[in-house]
Amino acid sequence: MTSRTQPRLSRTALPVAGLKLPPPLPEPGIVHLGLGNFHRAHQAVYTADALRHSPGPWGITGVSTSAARGPRPVLTGMAEQGQLYTVLTLRRDVGVAATVPGVHHPGLVADGQGAEAVTAIGSPTTRIVSVTVTEKGYTFGADGRLDLDDPLVRADLAGGPPRTALGLIVRGLQHRARTDGAPVTVLSCDNLMANGHRLRALIDEFVAALPASERPELQAYVAASLTTPNTMVDRIAPATTDEHRDLVARAFGVRDSVPVPAEPYRLWVMEDDFRAGRPAWEHAGALFTDDVAPYELMKLRLLNGAHSLLAYLGLLRGHRCIDQAVTDELLGGAVEFAMREEILPTVPEPEGMPGKAYVTELLDRFANPALGHRTAQVGSDGSLKIPVRWAGVLAESLAAGRVPRVLALGLAAYVRVITADDAYDERALGTVHDGARPRLAELAARASGPADAARLLLSEGDFLPPDVAQHRELVDVVGEFAYTLAVHGVEAALRSALT
Ligand SMILES: NC(=O)c1ccc[n+]([C@@H]2O[C@H](COP(=O)([O-])OP(=O)(O)OC[C@H]3O[C@@H](n4cnc5c(N)ncnc54)[C@H](O)[C@@H]3O)[C@@H](O)[C@H]2O)c1
Ligand SMILES: O=P(O)(O)OC[C@@H](O)[C@@H](O)[C@H](O)[C@H](O)CO
Image 1 (cartoon, rainbow, N blue to C red):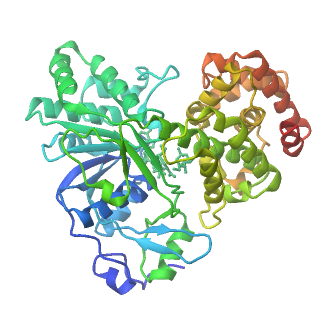
Image 2 (tube, rainbow, N blue to C red):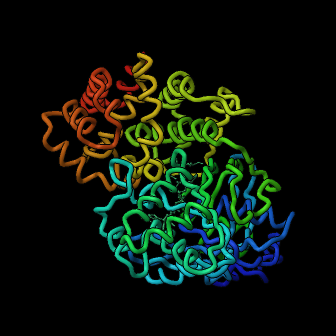
């Protein structure tokens, strides 16, 4: 348990705690939108490691971007600890190790300090604007384009201090265009396919939706001075719980209200297209390549695709965490089958990353019991994650004449988790949040039974592309699995998927 008598994490407490002092705080050069656990366990750690090797002006100003009002525990906690926090590296066998990146400057809250955030993005000392705002934060609609019906997007287009990530970025770029015009790179580190291209398209759409008088100057600046490289990002960093706070207190004798748990593994692959320089991330192990696509495809389809299968089927099996789901013989076996036989044939092998070995490594990473990665966390926002993780595999398999049965069962499991009140034990396993739930539940309420509900959600749910959503054979198989799940249970459905 943490104790009030223990010192709070601070630079002076670090040596006493036996933790390595971070390098002196560098001058700010990066503004990061979305000060969540992933950024703090990934980019911040790469940056701290790179700075140890090659110092430079790459301090990070974090911006808390969630559109929802309310307390900002990460921002507040970091402020109370001189912007420090621990990254706990959780291994299955040996004890815990921790690092303190120490690369952050005082942060900002978009909702209330939007003007300050725009000034920070617009500052000539800012050379990179990085982003981890989850799929929701990109404010795209069902067609993948900027959602011009979103009231926050409309408000940001109309002017005033912006609150959406796109609003902050574009108003920051506008500030640059109107001042010294220095080039900049906007770096998406979210789990989206072709994340840099995707973000660039949304920036262009946002600019195009501005009043005509604002467009020419901004369009000229964007065309000449902005780059948006694609990235593949990888490190499992679950949400923080009191257990992690207690772990820091027990292991290091200090209080940290905002530690980040993470696995030992990390990988970052990106295109080397930084218009105004970058930290020497290669010294921290980052890979630079001309084409990130094969890495992204392999990671999003195999890691994230399998994660979502483990989440929905794991919830139905009563598993609270991913490690329990993957070590459940029947479920783990089905997911491994899906990875090797259904997903792997659709992914190209990047150089130095043989697919079969990657699958074996992933199964081992998922099975790490120290992580406590909740199935309900991974399963949240499936309406936005499934298109990225499963849709491409489904489309390519169907075009090749194959119906991937475990993935089809995954779709049926998602439908059940999101629409059936008694699908899983919410009190024990946690809540699966999904912005599409009311719309999908309404569709399910019109259905004559579970199979019909699955058919309706697929055809009218707007979360799958038409070539998948309207594929007769797939829709029938998903409908059959939805029926089996409701009537005979998940074990019967898993056995049927594997026949
Ligand atoms: N955690 C991981 O294991 C991991 C690994 C690889 C990539 N990622 C990527 O990082 C993203 C964030 O993960 P995390 O673990 O940091 O989550 P988190 O919940 O800790 O943080 C999410 C961040 O996104 C912001 N956000 C949420 N909704 C938003 C909205 N509508 N508009 C703007 N900002 C919004 C929040 O303010 C917060 O800063 C993931 O969605 C994924 O794309 C995560
Ligand atoms: O972060 P999310 O919620 O988009 O997805 C949950 C996980 O699948 C994801 O975070 C993985 O842990 C991560 O992508 C590993 O690199």
